Amino acid sequence: MEKIVIEGSQKLSGEVRISGAKNAAVAILPATILAGSACTIKNLPMVKDVTYLRDMLIQMGGKIHIHDNDKITIDTSGISTSKIDLELAKRMRASYYFLGALLSRFKKAEVPFPGGCNIGVRPIDLHIKGLEALGAKIKISHGLIRAAADELRGARIYLDVVSVGATINIMLAACMAKGTTTIENAAKEPYIVDTANFLNALGACIKGAGTDVIKIKGVKSLGGCEHSVIPDQMEAGTYMIAAASTKGDVLIKDIIPTHLDAVSAKLREMGAEVTEYEDSIRVKAPTRLKAVNIKTMPYPGFPTDMQQPMSVLLSVSEGTSIVTESIFESRFKYFDELRRMGAKIKIEGRVAVIEGITKLTGAPIYATDLRAGAAMVVAGLTAEGKTTISNIGYIERGYERLEEKLINLGSKIRRIEDK
Image 1 (tube, rainbow, N blue to C red):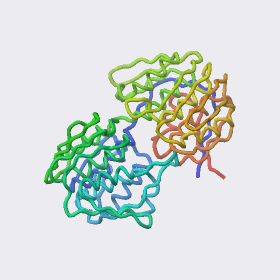
Image 2: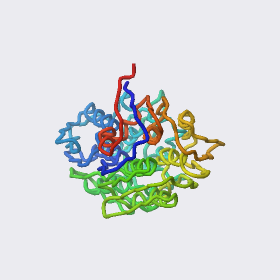
Image 3: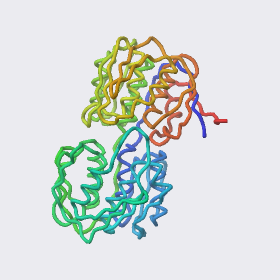
């Protein structure tokens, strides 16, 4: 395993191009199974989660041709198995999307319980509820989820809790179900819309993606297509916060600015200059920012994935901030690492009180999950002195060419062997 070393107190400046959205890509890749033919995916982020899914598809019999760094063609016509490898599946949460995709195409699926970041309870009961409503019979034993159906039929499905994963899994399963499926209280994230657009390009009939009611009219078959993944709003948000935290001036390019409205609004409230263009955002923070309160919410609210990087910025802002994490109950584990750097934070349940200090100081720290890893990078960039970050495999799951992009913005960052 390698470590990241950062020499902090360097103002970020310049331009950075944002990669394709990891959270959209990890849904679209399993969805290629529905095509049963070749699909070309562009703007694909080459992060570890994408690599894991690519390996799963190859292991199942899919053929993949890599055109260049962010474009691949996937031919799933040769896939005949409905089983997913345990070792690959346990590395990531999004492996559960194979449930809906395999069930739709083969009327059966055997998928191990998913892995991923340990940020709290993330049950799949809503996924199971939705698939059962479509006619699937599901058995769980020995760490495996087995689903089978003689026929999938459309149904009205109400999600008790807004869930991106359940919304997508139900969409995948319903595409070729008989009749019409209605998902109520559906998630509205941009990843939902992008996945629905991909499925519609295959020949599906999905309406309402991006609202809380999605309707899927089942079709008899689907085919191949070419699709470009949307920009990654979480990567973009991370660079926006990093720019503000280092008192920098950065233009974040190739994005959809409206996807970042919640982050932009909070940065403006703190005193940063945020200028939006057609496909880019400029963040400038020449002076120390002021404290704000944050509560994470489903889209279009403030995203839980940005809570951790934002808390780093709040830790060096003027005043006291209150952060309420309403999505995941175990997403404050990284605060122990920030305290090593001097941050003043008190936690009570899902509420954190952050008393801003003038500066963090470099220290050996640890990435506890993907977005916490990004937060540690922001902390290292902000802190005075040297910061060494261990367990960077989490960061590689969701950020493409991180060091290269940060070096281009003027940071002093490098990798070393973890001896």
